[in-house]
Image 1 (cartoon, rainbow, N blue to C red):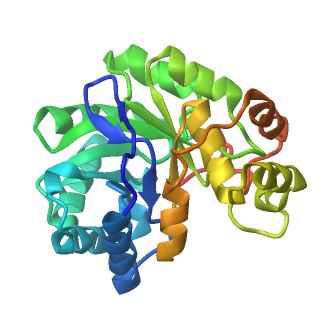
Image 2: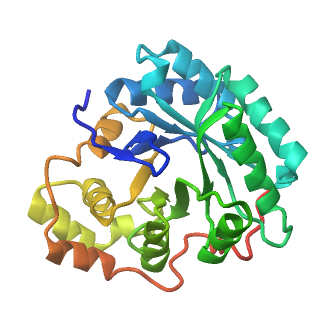
Length: 282
């Protein structure tokens, strides 16, 4: 088990670990076992979504865990097809029934789907669900500055977290700065860029830095994320890899290494060209 995972305090007072475990593409018993081992080695923030179709597995893993529920931070996310207020409320309730939990620690709007024009309505549903005790902290995912401005201006409530694609080929400097200005924690999905043949994971710059620090490439990338102020979500069902990805708090990258990694960013660095102003998630 990895000890001493630092925590971050969200602007609404909720303490969350500085790194979390993602569950996208994990389902059934494999998902249960993956989350169980992740909790056992030290992950206490578990990220799910209605559209991952694994909320039942998340709940089962929590029930099997020896870690008390109050020590865990469980996230789920609202799908685009349920942005209408009434549907959003029902979906939050349904997600809780699927997990068997009494509340979510975090609940996010998965994508803004601006062409549908209902994300403010969805945000109001999250605000009310929090007021009713169904959610402890509310946030968003893949929201650009203009989307953030709209929900804040129309409701007066600022998200605690904005979950965004963030990796060395897409460093999100402007988005991170905007989140920070608003007091929003940036949470990273696909922090390692997904393990494809042309991914940042294969970049020689990362290789060189990893060699110089005596760390793995994943550890270097995740440490870069932490020092940027982001909160990465990592996903692996392999126990040794789970431990490796958590073992990033015993060293620090110098500014030269940080700058080298940040310099890898690209204007077209999104993995699947999922621009939140264009991409529609249902």
